[in-house]
Length: 213
Image 1 (cartoon, rainbow, N blue to C red):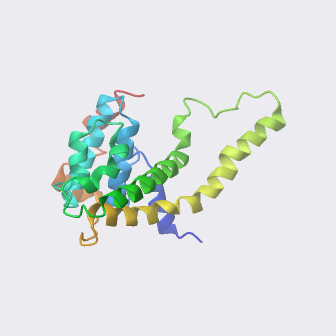
Image 2: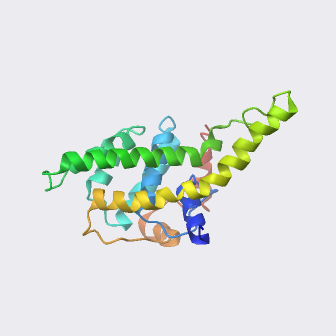
C-alpha cells in the first residue's frame, strides 16, 4: 500500500517544476534528475532551457554536487542529450575506472527505466487540447478508450511510479558514490540562498510562459 508521502513524492518527481507546479516537499537528488529530464523535454524552447538550467544549478549547488560530473554534464551537454550522456558519468572525473564499463551499463539501464516511467507519468502533457479519441463517434468505443487513459493507466501508475523512488536511490549511489551524504533542501531556502527561480515572482512566471510550447 502506497503511503501519502510516497504519493506526494511521486507527484513531485513527475511534475513540471514550473511556476504553477512548484515543489511542495524538500528537494533531493531525485528532483535533480527530474529537472534534467524536463530540460531534455524542453530542448526546443530557449526560455524553458534557461529556466531549468537555473533550477539545476541552484539545486546542484545546494546539494553540494556542483563540482561533480553530473552537474558538469549540464554545462557541457546540449539540452535533449542529457539523459543519453548520464551513463558516461563514470568516465568523467572519477578514480574508479576499473568497473566503469559495468557502472555505465547499469546507469544506462536505470536512466532508461526512469525516462520510461516519467513518460508514462506525464503522458497527458503531450495532449494539445483534448484527449486522444475524444472525437470517436462510437460512444461505447470512445468510453473504452477513456477508461484506459483515465482509469486503468492512472490507477496503475501509483504502484508503477514507486520505481522512481528505488531507481533514484541506486542512481545516487552509482553517480555520486556511497560516501556522498544524502541531502535535501526546502524550496524557500533554495530561493533565498541559491537563486532558484521564485514561482511567485511575476518575472519568473512571465518568462516561463512567454514561450508556451
